[in-house]
Length: 211
Image (cartoon, rainbow, N blue to C red; front, side):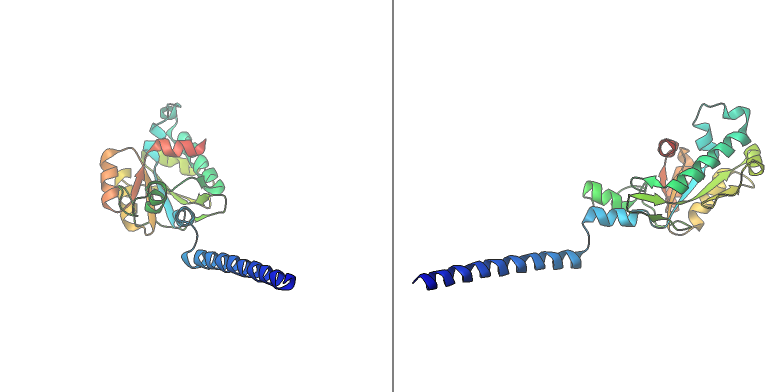
């Protein structure tokens, strides 16, 4: 009598342990098959293949720091800030990234405004949530003299527009591949680059990244 009861308790305990182990294995297998949570998937994809196309004149003009007294010097300072930002990485979602919007709002990817399908040199994201874009800084007019004031930066390419800077930016937005983000507050230029498939954000977003 005592032995049979003891045997029954041991069997029941073994069944529960086996059932628990089986449930844990099924959860682990489901996670392996389905991949990481949606937020993690969005972050891991957000920083890949991203190019920032910066409207240098527009960003420079958004700061009342006396840039008009020395356009080349002010543009050289912007170049230095962009080089430092590209080196340390950008925190947060890529502007206009559909995967990031989906994770944050629950909307399907591509349902929002300003998502782009293109971009240029590759960027990547580290485990800390930073992404590392390559940058095209478009300059025009007297600001082109900044080329004599700066050293080459690995992730920043200066494009001296032969004519209007807006035309050069629109051309880059349409020509580059991958995810492209144009930094400008110019309304007509924003319309042009959005039509070319690029996302847009304003100078304020970029200045906040500089800290």
